[in-house]
Image (spheres, each protein chain N blue to C red):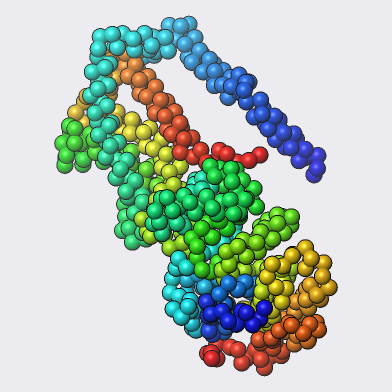
Length: 292
Length: 279
């Protein structure tokens, strides 16, 4: 798995990205490379700057130093090659479902016939046939997020940015949608950056999991899950390795300042401690002005 | 504590039950009964007071007398002529006030520069009794059509500006971010987000604006060159025929009710997506 990923090109590249809100250091020297067709999950507690990071990737907000590159081009604003799925769906309440799903295409000025075809295709891909004429308020949260997903997919963007997309849903719907998201991605592979505060979700969906810790937000740890494509989520949930990794990540999140121990023994797993959190010495080194 | 919350729950259930019986909802809808009851008591009481008292009809009038006078004036054609005269001012005034109000509200709501340039006047005018402006307006624009129309504009424009302004300001910032994320242009943003979320505010503003426009129309007809329904009312009141003096007022009331109902119908039509909330 790791080898096949390395053959792909880097799609998104963040290098030493810092972000401040006034005096508050929100993001501290973030370095991430996302390959084509790779699913990267970013796991972290609330308030660690995950959403800020995603908004920077989308070009919605600026960053104070470093570089954000999409296929070598600097990201200076939202671009059609990236599409966002929002935590609270972000559907227009006065638009019918088909209009909501076709929104991005409409904005791009695609011909009507093309929009109709793509909307039909993605409506059925997310299982919303028969609800095209409904208003969002008439649908359950799960269905609304399916529409949010279809809207992002319909633009045929290269990169999907997902901001805790299943966070507002009940546990059952959530598992269902996780499963479907992977199936959709197998049918039409693209890069995904998926933000979550659920350890399970990060492990199940990610080819790679990045662990973020707060104040300032930084990527503390990175590992490949190695579950492979075409994975059966039910099987993974029941597996010994899933439990071990889950336990390991839980320990990491609970004590972010402690040096992480060795990964559970699995030869094909690659885990890297990006930043060794330790005493105050380390903290001082990662302060303002100490960029790469 | 639990005993205190129980009645509220019970009431909530009752309302839900009533809503379910919607095929006959209009029959048992208490709103209708309450309205009828209120009209019977107030109008009936007024009528009764007029019938049993020996007050001169020149200083006091009652519903049946006013309705009779209304029919009388309609038959002679005086009412229609006056209404025509008045409606020209009203239509011209509203025709100017509404588009201008929408434009100003939109600009002030969307662009801070416009807000800072204009809000002083808007808030000043909000607190100004427009009646006090009648004289200076008459000095500049004359006491005829231009002056009267301007009075109507001043009366009617405020609710439009203020409501549209708030409608634009209350656009969901989160949906704003969605439009940005999908690379929407500014005009697409107006089309997809700002206009649709502003419409309910605008419609509510229009309802207020029609009512104030009617008031402005009569004020203009009283204070400037006397004409239309204002003149009709003033003339007959001056001749101590109070029933005929109040008949044009009756017409204004009916117009007010009809316009408000029309606005309500529009409101429901434009916000059909709101009424579909699942139970």
